[in-house]
Every structure is written in C-alpha cells, then in structure tokens.
Length: 478
Image (tube, rainbow, N blue to C red; front, side, top):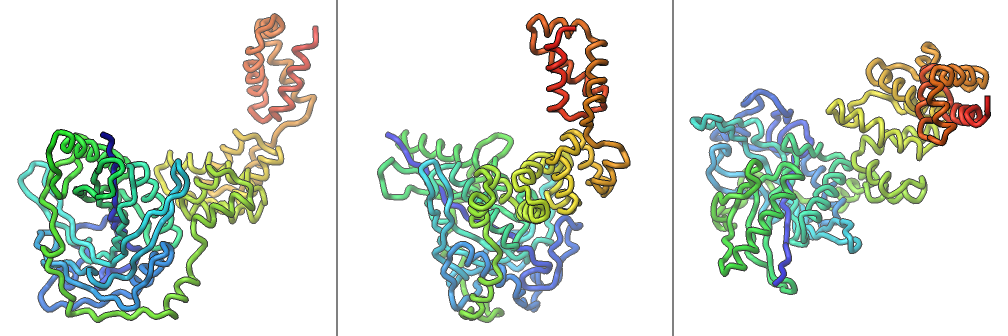
C-alpha cells in the first residue's frame, strides 16, 4: 500500500507596527525582559484595550494580496486558557467573525502551478515567552511579547509534501515582505508556523487523523519534521495502530517529534465575544483605498522581469526574494540600463558580502547611483572584475565614489599593447621551462603564464588582449 501525506500550515505573522495591538507599548525586538509592558498587555484588572488601527490596515493588505473575501463586520473573541506566559488567562483572537476567508496562494510544482487554499486569516495578540533554566530548576517569563499583533493565516490541507509546504511558506514570506506588513524574520519569531500532518492511503478522499507540530521556527526544521511525522504515522497505521490527534514538539537535536498533549477542541477554549472591544465594519471604500495602496506583488514583478528585462527564471526568482533586492535592482537599472549586468552583480558580489557580513540586503549602504557607475565601469572594460570587487568593498566600508577611487589608485584597465607585450616578455623570460612545455604540447601551462604576466601588471591588464598577445608570442618561434 502506498500513502499520501497531507499538510496544512497555520502561519503566525508578527505585524510590523511600532506599538502593540491594544496598548501603546513598543514592539522592538531584543529589549531587556519585561521592559515593554503596561497594565493592559500585562493583564492588570480593570485595564482596557484600545485597538491599533494599523493592525486592521495591515490585515486588509494581506487579505487582498491572497484573494481572500473580506468580512464586512469583524469582531474579537476571548480564547480562554491558562498558561504562565498569558497573564490575562485569555487571548484576544477572532473565532466567529475573522477578517478574511477563502483565499489562495499559487505555488509552482513539478506538475505545474498549484493553488493552495487559505481557509481564513484572523487577527490576534501574541502571548509572552517562557525561558527555561538550562539547569532545569527554574522557568522565567518575559511579558514583552504579550500584545504583539499577529495574523494567523490558516491554509487548507492542500499541501502534499515537505517541499510543497516550504514553497508555500516561502511564497507567503515574499508576499508579506513586499506588501510591508512584517519583517518575516523566523530567527526572531516574527514568522512561525504550526504544521498539521496526516496520511491516508493513495486514492482515498478521507482525511486521516492529524497531529500538530508547534512553532516551527526554521525552514530546515519544518522539512525534517514533516518527513519524520509522515513516516511515523505510516509505520503506526501499517502495523495496525491508530493515530491520536495531539500536539507534538519537534526536537531539533534528536530529529524526532514528541507528544506534548492531546489536541484541544474549539469547545475547550470557551470562546465568547470580547466585551471590551466593539465590532468593526469594513466598507467598500476602505477596501478600495487599501487595494490602491498595494505595491506591485512579487508574482507580477517576477513576470515583468522575465518578459520586459529578459532575465532568466532563476535571476527573477532571486531578485524577487526580498523587496530590498528588487528595489536596488530597479533603481540601478533605471540609471545605467544594464539589467543583466546589474542582476549578475547583485546575485553575486552583493549577496556574497551579505552572507560574509551576516547582514540583510538593505544593510549594505551603497546607493544605486554608485552601483550603476561601478557596473558601467566593469561592463565597458574600464576595470577588471577583480578591481571591481576591490572598489565595491571600499564603497561598502568607506562610502567611496567608484570613479574617484579608480582614478586615485590608478586602477583603470591597461590596454596599451606595448605595456602588455613588455609584461608578457618579462613573464616568458622568467619562466623559459613553461614556454618550452607549451611549445611541446602542454597547453595548460598557458594559464600559468597568463597569471605571471597579469601579476607584472598588478591584475590591471585587459584579460582578452593579454591572452591574445600571449598566444601570438607563444606560437611565434624565437
């Protein structure tokens, strides 16, 4: 018997508002514990919530970008449960009248495009964070995160593999970044996912019993967890057992999941309307204004790069992976008009420096004007690629102007034939054995001689001209 894996994701997105959802406390990441709290988000008796309108604006953007139907009347509900990091004893969420339902997100699979349904999008507040003593003696609680505004985006069970789940999450991450509602930093908890996994015999239309893997905080962990949980469930069912609906924890060290608790049902949370928050009516005018403010979405940008800028699918995919890359690319191309050259530089040297410096694409403080000039200097043959990399580092570290730096350090490419011939003659004279080896048929030594001549000219020679002149001299008897 063969089995199909069924996956659904519940993605929690921390919205990029400057203050919390129901109070004025800041939402900065990494501040000392319990320094961004007030009576409202700490759950003091008598403290009343006041809704942050920006949260609704951001939620509307996400609903429109995912083709959701927006409810004309939304309400907030209390989700009641006790946990040490939830000081009120309930979480304000949306159970009965969420902001959006019935959307979709299209991913690309080996079999073509596949629409992944979005069951609903609802607004809620985050809970605090428990910090466990590594000695196992104490658990500390940080309430800074209490009241951080979240969107929960719940997919339908339309995903059939770990690969599809990762593609969906990456597609969603790109969309959220481009519409400016979240920074989507999984390492900081602003994008988290609960993964629901079940299996069923191939051909069956009946969903199996699902288990939920909580708070997956990296793409790699999610892929491993889905694959493991699928194998675990298939093994149990093959041996005649049954799957319990439960919440499980993924252990990154042991690469396996462990049961945490039997999965709660909706009734266990005793949802009821929050008496302190009024219902909100969302009219057509509000929706129209929000739609008009949406930027070009990554799918549309991707297609435009393919059709109007003649980029490859790979190039377009990389450049639409983050709005900072797309913005830099478009601004630079608008100045120098060399789309392929700019794309190559951003995908190569720019991202390489980001990786080496462990920074985000927008953290390299190089203006499009300077980058355009550097790309043009390289494309027009005024400098070598090695020189361009040297100049680029100076542009990052010292805000150097490319033209000025190249001029002051005499870095322009050498194209004078007499100068190049002199360097080649010096290299050949210094390495007569290599010259003899080449003339005896060992063609590989030519690369060595090119390097020696280039060293004489400090790497500034025109590579094509140097190669041509060296070849002519090697093939001309003394």
